[in-house]
Length: 328
Image (cartoon, rainbow, N blue to C red):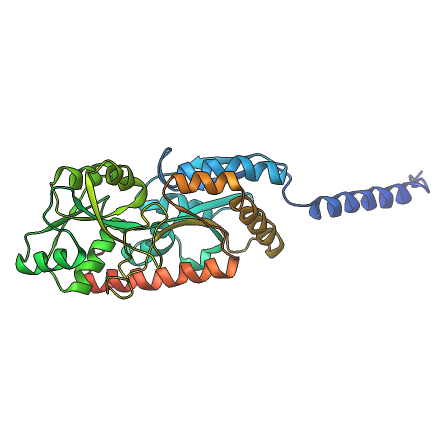
């Protein structure tokens, strides 16, 4: 005899499907975040991007009620870490702590890059650092004008050190060279510390050093500051004028670090993450610690940070092209 279906079986199946659909709906609408968030730092542990990121991670986790961890992915001028985030799931759980190099300079400096500007949505800046133009304390050069005069009087004789090819410490020197029409020699070093020590010991004649690296040597009387980049004087060196004040127009670039997520991350997740990042960056303890590092705490609105990133991509790109500074 043929089997007959129990009259309740279709009802039970429909009920099970309804429960499953309801569960899926609740899961899909679950408020973000529900699990650990990873901050990808495209630099080494203990570096200039890593330290402020770790200071922020704990407080951000407390605000969001989820763990926030830092994962270091150094290599290839920051492009290794950036490319990982560009390919990550756009769900708000993988965040890039990018910087002027990985998200502005690299697009023009490298012909072969595995990501593009459109792969990211900028959220807000974390911290910015001015570069300070320094000479050895024993140098006879006492001012920006004197440095320009010395460079013009001795073409090809004065050298400037940097933390490496393509770093802001390098490109600021190239910008100086272009704006003053001088012939100065770039000496790249493998990192910030040896680049700074080269100017401290007098191996090179000047450097547009990161504020964090040179500040202690300025305070110790080993370096003489001539000017700072940026559009305002630095609180740590209030007596030192800006390049703009000294007549060097359009010389207000600063090194920045900020947060990016994959471009397809839902707008509501972007906004919640940006809002919470900005709130943490206004925390008095974070602001104090960042200033102690020689930086300026960030927290720009999302649109403002996006404009800063786009402007720097254009500015550095034009300089790299004019000076033919291809890195690969």
